Length: 174
Image (cartoon, rainbow, N blue to C red; front, top):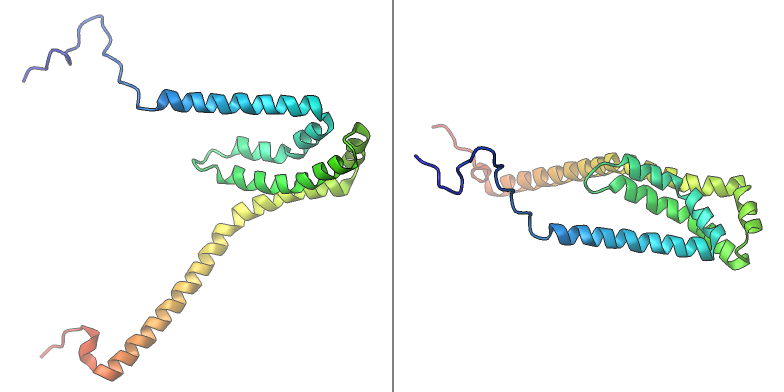
C-alpha cells in the first residue's frame, strides 16, 4: 500500500511539525502575564513597605522550600504549607502595619524567638497536615465501611428471619 504524497518522507527534509494544541500559546501568555503582575506587585511592596517585604521574604522561606520540593500535579504540599505559613506570618505583618512600618519594628520582630516559632511552626503544621491527613482519612473511611458492613449484615439477618432462607439469593441443592 502506497503512502499518500503528504506523508511520504523526502530525503533531506524533516517531517512537518505537529500543530500545537489549541490554547497552548494563550496559556503561556496568561502565565507570563501573571508572573509579570506578581513581579510588579512585589516591586511595589518592596519600594513602599520594605520592612513588610523583608518580613514576608524571610517568613515565607518554608513555603518556597515546599514549592521547590513539590513536583506533584496538584501541588498540594506547596498549597498546604504555604497557606499555613502565610497564616503564621500575617499576624506579624498586621502588627507591624498597626504599630508603624519601620526597620526598628522589623528588628524587634526578627529578634523574637516566639515570632520565628509561630511563623515556621505554622509551616511545620502544614507539613504535618499534608503527611498525616491521608492516613487519618483512610482510618476514618475504614471505620465507616466497617460500621456500614455491620448494619447491612444485621439488616440481612432481620430480612432472612422475616422472609426465610429464600431471601438470601443462594440456590438450594435438591
